[in-house]
Image (cartoon, rainbow, N blue to C red; front, side):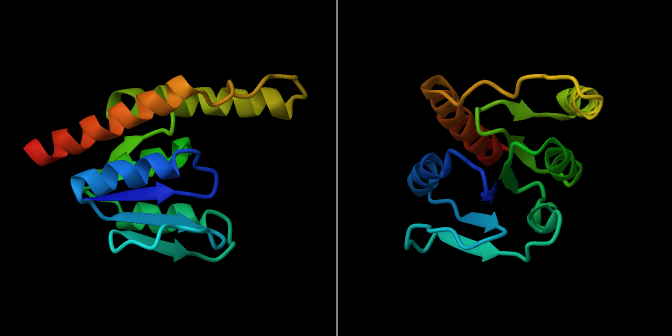
Length: 148
């Protein structure tokens, strides 16, 4: 088992490290630019080119049934699910086969509204509750995968 992190804008990297260390799971931090990561044998850093979707492509290729992918990117979440991975958003919300279709549809609607000039708000600010929900969801995902 391992954790794959879409890291460029991930607000829960420190939480991922703590949970991974507790469960002794390797973590791969994937980004388009160099990011500081702890010097620890379980943490691996992969810096991909700055090409469009380069980090997403790397993560999707590495995703499988033994991986937990952490991303807020709905299209990447879909690719990881299709590869058999478990997928969590940074707020702890799991992406599942049952929920991904609705998330993709909502994403498309919002993109159309923005393209039409509509002023719509973005997501709510990241909160302590989101961080707590993420910690619980990641721990639960690890336990679930270990039981299978």
